[in-house]
Length: 135
Image (cartoon, rainbow, N blue to C red):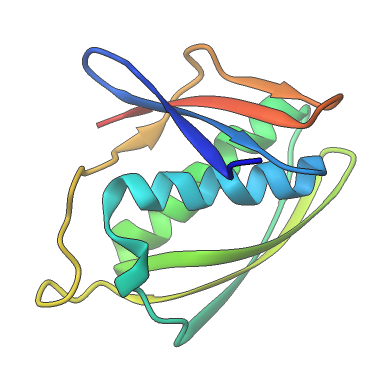
């Protein structure tokens, strides 16, 4: 099973992310988002960040999770490539591994501004999430 699959979209970028568990699907959504932005093979795991989020439902949790990662990219210039995600109801804890953006090694392919609620979906049976990004 692939980690994620890009969704053709006219003005924005979207993806389906899959996993054996919903935790893995959330992790793969983050991986896919950063893979849209840059070549993750060139990202080292020299930085680590822990994230904890509680929301009212899993759709909002996915939205906030991805936008929190984009916030860390915007503020700290952090690119992540590996995610250990644990979901407990509508609470997410994660450890994210990556490094600071280096323009000499990391080509910015697409600048992702934010995750959107447009067609956002979290499916628990056959774990899958769908998200569209504003680029």
